[in-house]
Amino acid sequence: MSRTSVSNLLALAFATSLGCLPLSRLAAQPAGYNYDESKVPKYSLPDPLVSESGEKIGSADEWNEIRRPELLNLFEEHVYGRAPSDAVEVKAETLEESDDALGGKAKRSQVRVTLSRDGRSVPVDLLLYLPKDAKGPVPLFWSLNFKGNHTTTADPAVLVPDATIHPKSADGAPSKVHVQAAKSERGSSADRWAYETIVDRGYGVATAFYGDLDPDYDDGFKNGVHSLFPEYGSDDPKSSWGTIAGWAWGMSRILDYLETRPDVDAKRVAVMGHSRLGKTALWAGASDPRFALVISNDSGCGGAALSRRAFGETVKRINTSFPHWFCDRFVEYNDNEAALPVDQHQLIALAAPRPIIVASATEDQWADPKGEYLSAYHAGPVFELLTGDGFGSDAKELPPADQPILSRVGYHLRSGGHDVTDADWAAYLDFADKWLRKSE
Image 1 (tube, rainbow, N blue to C red):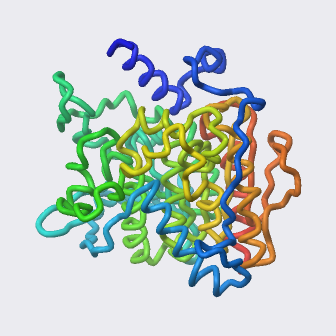
Image 2 (spheres, rainbow, N blue to C red):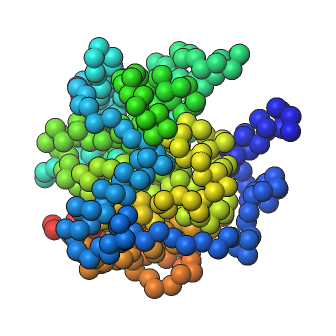
């Protein structure tokens, strides 16, 4: 295959992963893409409640002391990579504040959170909207965005960033290019961010540009949060952290900052993400139990979808298109999913006992809605063991669209394509009302 053909395939996979292609184009995917359920290979899933030594896990203590650490280690070693445990300094500088945002409904804060270690630093610009009339600290949704805070809202006071990181220079080498972000981009993704609805329901919301934490290209891990740990991973390079682990680690560092704010209830922060950032939210929720609720929106392969189904985007396809997202060992499972010691239902189980909701879209076959649903289904027994509440359906088939299951392990199948819509936020707010506000 020519270099041009390979580039076209990668571009097609990239566009599809962002939901940029209509369903008619999905049907024209190159050979090797499976959208036929009859061609899903037979598979056997590893049991989340059986330890590596074959011991049946029968109590919360056994889960917390034996199985949960085993599963975390396996995902670190084989999928996402192991992030550093070293502490970094977290400093915050308020850039702008207002008590009259969103038509007078909200307080707005724009804060530069700087992560520093050994003379190196990474600044992350955080945008927060909080209900103006809240009587105390509020629960909050925390989610990264794809194109900059100013693109998530038409609010003219949201700052336009001074610089962005561009993936490649003309010769194909990674380069950092400083450009004035186009003001015409303001509000271009606002339809994915239901700020007023969230604030009206009594929640806060925080977001930051994902590229502030780590660039979304294969740069040899020399920029973003990876640059804070230049020697890290040399002892086991195949299991060193990839970009998804970097984004997740960064989300935890922003939670460190949120814990210092008296107007945020840091014990009730929901971590949410869409697409690749849905994968990030799942891994952040698994690796950091401080997140009180986890939301995966259309996260697909390497997120909520079962790898062993090899439906839509496969392990080989995602490792080829995005080699920087995962640890290097993950490529050993290209066309070899059955050899993986874990599968994604166990990732969902790692949120237990905290509530988690997995969302899919009917036209987003690339992300394998059925595989996402089955992950939630097969994670249910762990939640039942720990809480008595599991998955709210005994059926192994997809439920009707637009009828969210709001059990402790929730599932939401929305009509439409790869996106975040008002219907998604309505489901997440109902889910948060049920679980984050249970003790109110």
